[in-house]
Amino acid sequence: MKRAGALLLTVLPVVLAVTAYGLASPHHAAARRREAVALASPAAKELAQELVASAENATLDWRSAYGYVEDIGDGQGYTAGIIGFCTGTHDLLTLLEGYTTAHPRNGLARYLPALREVDGTDSHQGLDPGFPAAWKAEAKVPAFRAAQDAERDRVYFDPAVRRAALDGLGALGQFVYYDAIVFHGPGQDGFEGLRAEAMRRARTPAEGGSEQAYLGAFLDVRRTAMRAEHPGIDTTRIDTAQRRFLAAGNLALRTPLVWKVYGETYEVA
Image 1: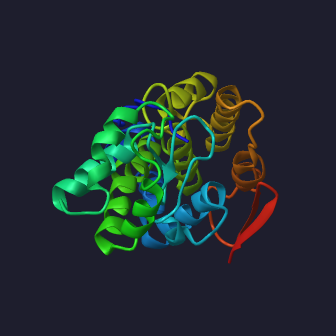
Image 2: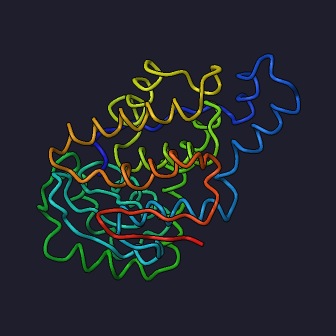
Image 3: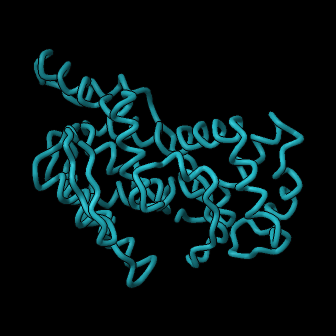
């Protein structure tokens, strides 16, 4: 679901977020720092993957999606793997180039020339009919699953958590950023553009603003962008999931959680 040609986020170390609190007491600043890194804890990271998978793959079992591959008709070619790497948006190509450097004899290496040709388009030229079956077969290899994990973290998860920490956001805000980067891609034509527009509408907590007000503004901006990019798109990943958590004041993303995506109800106890 990511835009073609999106650039990776440039992020600063999380510790710099401390300076954003200026006159805040040491106790308050320490509490905010603990909250700001919450999503990076193993349990919270697992929850984040489940939440994304409910919208991307209609399941909480995100590990079942390593072998997922399908053209969903969004103009970005094949969507595949745990985070929806796309043949038309460069991230799938980057994943396979890195993986092939480490594992030259892998079952997908023969598709690299074709992937370079179709990058930035929705074309299947040179990929059909064998690419989907080859992806599913390679997804059974532990090294390829690990490569998907690493690329997800490098391009999407880690930048989202770091950027949210700099903005003074807790676990919910970090997840909101993560889901946005997964869907829209990083860079000024994706997540960074959404963030910039939200910051024009509301101050971040790091700037002394209300966390709930800022996240509300960000979700407004993102929902508008989703509908502009894909008219008629279902926006329940915002409307009956992230909005529900925000309305409940669950900024720490504490469980139990109940939400709906595409009409299906999900629960994490």
